[in-house]
Length: 381
Image 1 (cartoon, rainbow, N blue to C red):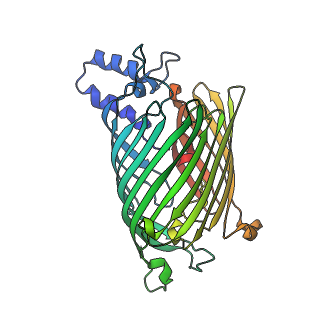
Image 2: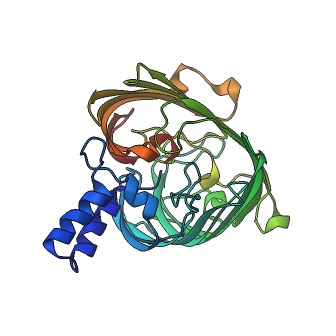
Image 3: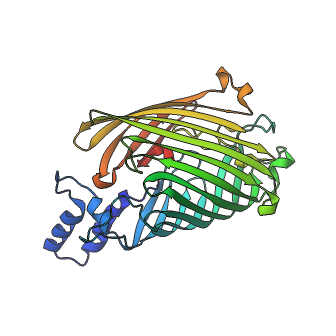
């Protein structure tokens, strides 16, 4: 989930420069204080957000270290009904230019647009950027690489996705996306020998066909309903890549609301890639408490459960646990292949009309402790 929503609070500082004390108090109350309970709430501000807004970025991914950056986001004017009110239920359309840097030297520059058109019949997401990421490759059984190899991956990235709603009242979307990554791989291992297959520059390009069904009550921090998506991808030299391989992925999430105070979330992910797959494209276990790319394989299974318990007004506590496997196939799954995590955290309901919560998670993985600043659902990070 993008980290932008908290930082719109900074706008009150920017705009307050040209306002009198009385105007400052009135403007802040109108945009950031809920008339329902008098608590800090961004719903009204998000409803009326139009124009270019600078927003800081905070990165807490343990694989690249703590970092930050700045995003200039342009909020396109949202459709209003006959009463002049912003139409609810439609995703916002926005464009952004962003840059970020982390403690281990990772950086990225990105331009992107996300839009909903024709009353949400068509959804478009596009991005172009230059990432330079410093990571560790811990090896895959099929490649026989040594554990903990430092490498840099950088290049030119393009992503284009088009989704269409099958029927007006049916939350089923079908479509496709195209991704191209012209990259260079460089290992920083001194005199250690590296498998030549790992250091070959590999341009990746492919088309993924997507089917998504979304019955969640909101897209940020769901309380009830479910989401399921299937992706089938073809990566081929004919599409601009250097290798031929395929992928299949399933994502499923379901939420149950008990007595309006306890929300139980269930998650299952399956990801499989086969063919001449570059090492950095191998699926990995994506769980809080486990760094990105730590456990990779051609086939990854991940399951997780979390509970959010409302304890006081807008404040909730979190508890979560999960496990995953990264293997070459189902036959290779055994007791040792399961990597599990457990953790806790807290949330604050930051924008009630949008169902947006924010907070911090603390996770204990197989090898380390990690913390995450979370906006919305951590399952979409």
